[in-house]
Each structure stands twice: as structure tokens, then as C-alpha cells.
Amino acid sequence: MPNAAEREIRRPATRDFVVGLGRAFAGAVIFSIPILMTMEMWWLGFVMDPLRLGLLILLTLPLLVRLSRYEGFRETASLTDDIADAFVAMLVAFVAFLAILWVLGVFDTGMPVSEIIAKTAVQMVPGSIGAMLAQNQLGGGDAPRRKPDETYSGEIFLMIVGALFLSFSVAPTEEVVLIAYRLTALQELALLGASLALMHAFVYALEFSGSAERRPGESFLHTFLRFTVVGYALVFLVSLFVLWCFGRMDGIGLEEILSTGVVLSFPGAIGASVARLIL
Amino acid sequence: MRQDEEADQDETPSVTGTSTLEWIVAGVGVVLVASLVVFLALQAFTQAEGPPVIVLEPVGIEKVGDHWHVEVRVRNDGFSTAAALDIAGELKDGEETVGEATATLDYLPRHSERKAGLFFNQDPGAYRLELHARGYVEP
Image 1 (cartoon, each protein chain N blue to C red):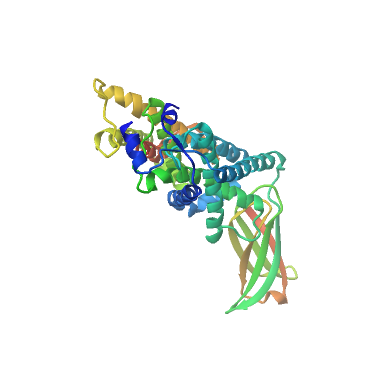
Image 2: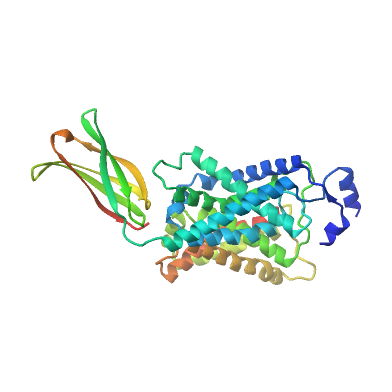
């Protein structure tokens, strides 16, 4: 970490950490309130296969660690700090959502503990990402931190995070499947095209702050293939993974799986491009 | 480098180490995540298979307006979740059915119980009350 070596590593203050915890809590709640109040998300607590839920939680960890480098509660000096932050984010999200779901009356008497735990654990996944994002998006007077380096893998990583986050909140709803049933193949093709176009336009054409510019000497086609098409492919895979986790693929024909994937990739694509803009 | 100096003047911490308190909180997080994963894995491997086993039990009868309300506790002792679970209550006078009421539960997860209510036009106390589950779909 050349940056860390050059700079002095500050002694951590307890107050900073407590403020960080508060911000993480705020981030978890703000980013997750729509799904905290979604019935299908509660149902996942007993419908979802426990192994897939466990896998999802395990896969979220490295994602949080890497995200902590870009965003996180503070500018971290080493990998161990990022790991610490990742676990803190998960803990904050779990405790916060346990309390919120209880206040919202989601937990009935007569509900076994395993169901309460699973209901909270599903929500913890996007919640911990929200907690990680809090600092950068809601941080105080500090100048907004920019990612340390804009590498290709970094951009791709951010797209995956954005896609995961947005498709996670849409995938449990019945509407995704319903839309997939109703769309004809031609409409799905159009939706795929629209997702690609939006993804590209959001990042390159609309000149939002944080927009990327095509590098000099790089043709439209080059950028389009390098970022947008590759990005969409990843968004599609993320969508399939989320659908699989939620058991939305079980016993479904391949054609219907693909069309559900295209439908879910629409919010995923928007999430991916927005992540590149704001993170 | 220039930026770093400015940042220091602003007393904006550029790189912060991890405090003992944070290590403790992170440690609790590790315990939480590890126990969640172990718990879920245990659940996955120890879970028995089988259809939902629905047990119905009347817990109270009350006159509400022109109707009689029977509160029913519905329990699933089985190992799988029932969705759109239909339950029915019949009032029997000997072999003859004199009253009938049904209710549908959106979901009844394994090893869980929910409460439902059935409305009858006759006093259930005067007849024999039979409760049964009629059908469900897999979630």
C-alpha cells in the first residue's frame, strides 16, 4: 500500500468509531428500507434454502472487504482494517434489522427462532453493503473520497456491487416473474437493448458528475464493448445468481429462466451504471 | 502530496488505524457471521423431508354480531412450508353438516403456528366442530 506508507497512520479515536457506527446504521437503514418493508423478503426467511443463504453471506464478505477499500467507514491502511470494517458492517446491519423488523411486527409469536434469524440474515446482505456505502454518501464535511485508483477491475467490481444491490431488492418480488411471463421474445430483446443503451448513456453520454469520459484514441465501439457489454454480461450473471439464491430458478424451464434473467438485469444494469457514477 | 498536507491542516484523518473498540465489535461480527453460517448449514443438513403436517385446534368461541367466531390455532409440525393453506371447519349434527366456514393462510412455515378465525351462523357449542386442512401449494 504505497499510499499508506507515505501517510501517517492516525491513532483511531473512539469517538470517530462511534460516529462511524452511527453512519453505518443510517446507511443500512436508508438503503434497505424499501426491502425491509417488502413482504416477499420476509417470506424468504422460510422459503429460502439455508445453504444458499449461507453461501450468499459468505460471498458478501469479500465483497465488503473490497468495498471497504473504495468506500467504507474510513480510509483504511491495510487489509486487516478492511476485514474489521466488513464484519462491523454485517453486525450493524444484523442488529439494526433485527430491531426494525421486530418494531414493524414482522416477527409473530409462534415463529421459531430459526425463522427470525433467517429473515434477518437475508436482509443483512444488502444492509451491510448499505452500511459500507454510508460513509462516502453521507459522510460529513470531509471531501468525498475518490476510489484510490480507477482500474478496469475496480470499475467492473463496482458494477457487480451495484447490480447485486439493485437486483437484490427487486428479485424477491412476484412482479419479476410476472413480467417475464408476459413479455414476448421480441419485447425481451428490446428490454435487453434498452438496458445496454441506458447503461452506456448513464456513464458516458449524460455528463453526470462522476461520468467517465472515453479515453482519447478509444473508439465508441471499444468503450462500449470493454465496459458496457462486459458489464451487462456480469449483470446478467449476477441476476441469475440472485434468482438461484432465492429459489426462483427451481423447476423452471431454461427459456423462462433466461427471460427472468433479462427482466432482472434491467434494474441490475441501472444499478451497475449508477454504482460507477456515485461510488 | 500537496493534497495530503492540506488534508492534515484540516485535521481530516487520511488513514485511520483500527481501535481496540472496533476490534471488539468486529470480533462480535465474526462470531455472528460464523454462527449464522454454521447454523444455516446445520439446518440444511439435519432437516428432514416430508409434507407439512397440519394440526388444528380451536382455542376460543365468541359471539360476534350475528355470527359465532371460532379462533383456530394452526400448527405445522412437518418439515416443509405450506403456502396457500386452506383450512375448513364444519359443524356436524350427527352425520349432517349444518354449518361450514373456511380460511386461507398465505404461508405456514415448518414448525410454526398461526392463528385463524372461522365464522359460523350457528352456535358451535350446540354441535360437533370438525376442523381440517384441505390443501396447500409448495411455496
